[in-house]
Image (cartoon, rainbow, N blue to C red; front, side):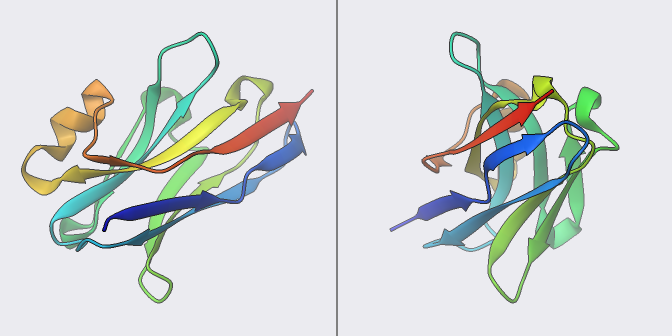
Length: 126
């Protein structure tokens, strides 16, 4: 059974940093890319970052590039999202997702995935 469990969300002040973690199990990182998406109530879900570990390839939403860093921790079997210089506009529920290797780039652009976690809330106060 595929499981994606996010953690690390919380309430922080603007300018601070946060590290989200996605604990993945039930699938191989050789078969699936893992990405982070976020959603604000009433708005469409948007892509944030994605990693395809066999090729060490990362994709980012243009507006977060430079502040967000996605990485895989092989010892913990997690995919982490480091968020620096947080802004109130980063407030959202952040979801971890797994996308099949052959189509992950397109899936990431479309905001689609084969498996989703339950999400973790990030709230940034100004």
